[in-house]
Image (cartoon, rainbow, N blue to C red; front, side, top):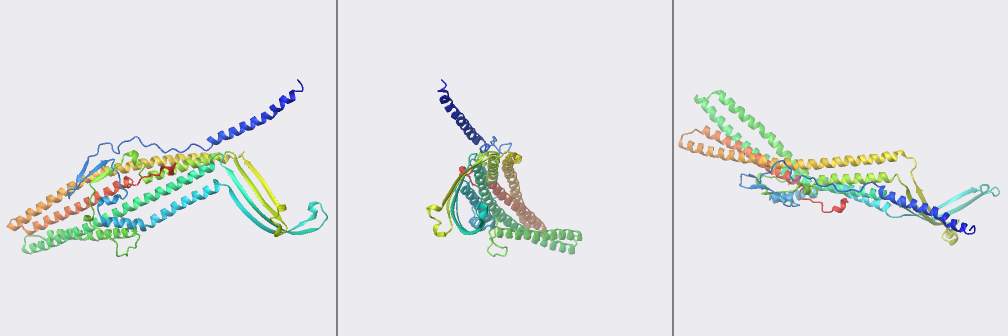
Length: 501
């Protein structure tokens, strides 16, 4: 019995530390699975199925040209959505702006920078790092330091070595850091798409503003001519005793007020032309900046309305906020991983010799292998860093929800704007038609001698004033359409879902 006891105890003595080591390893691996924080999941689409609290009318309005514009649920948005305005001149200007915009050039460079930053981090963390070293030095040592007789020993020492190092990403800190950089690259990509959408919308809006102001300058000039002629007739009536100086002063005041409005309109038109030149990458002095009129645009007959869940995958600003949320989630994982052990392996192989010709002989070989396990013991700042990263994730989540709510508000605003401005355009169109009919009747009465020429001039001013309002209403409907396409995300869709995973 006694002879056999050592035999039975020895395997147990070996098994206990083996079990402990196995248990420790399993515990480390188990911690590694949960140490990096929660994985990112794309936010669920909102439960809302509409943008406004009431049903939108199918037909928004009939324009002065008889075009009926309606909102179509679920229709696809074309990538080159500006072609819906059916203006070859506008198409050419937008393509020129997309090719020459410094804003887009800067956004593209920032995107390349983000992608290269990801590649640099991936190259330095996913693969072993190897460095070659070659050195030569002349040294002088005191023999007494090595227990030998006093004396100085001077010699040359040449070294050549290769060092290899690899850090194990056991707790996924490096992986989550790469995930954060990939999300930052996605953010820059969505910013680029948003910049393209904004640029195209600004070009169209500026062209429409230029066209509106040009039309209003022309109409104001016609009103001024009519008022000038009316003032001359009134002065002759004063001479004949059928009018007073008060009538002359009132008409002169009205005429000068009309004249004073023309410089402001011209200034606005010039500024719109300067803005258009800048948007297409030219200076304001360029002579080839196009001039637009309202007849250059056709109001699209159909407006494709995306459902709320689809809008979240089409709006670059929402996707950019989602990318920042993803990055914040990954950065939280990076902060948590710092609380756990860091394991690295290193190896050195090389040679040392007193002369260069013996540097690569077999007898000069030196090598070393090393492993390092570093576990933070007392670093209270690490936990605070993890909590800060978690708070950053909460802030990014709130910003994302705000971006979604803002997007839904944009769509609701433009839908209501389309409805109300359509009603205004319909009423303004009716006013122009009524004013033109009145002018036609007054002209017939004047031809028959039943009305004087002053009444004709007055009716003409009413017509021109109504056309001024119609010009503004038509331009507003075009701007509403541009805003609608912008609110829909401009036809761009994130088809590369893996980029954000």
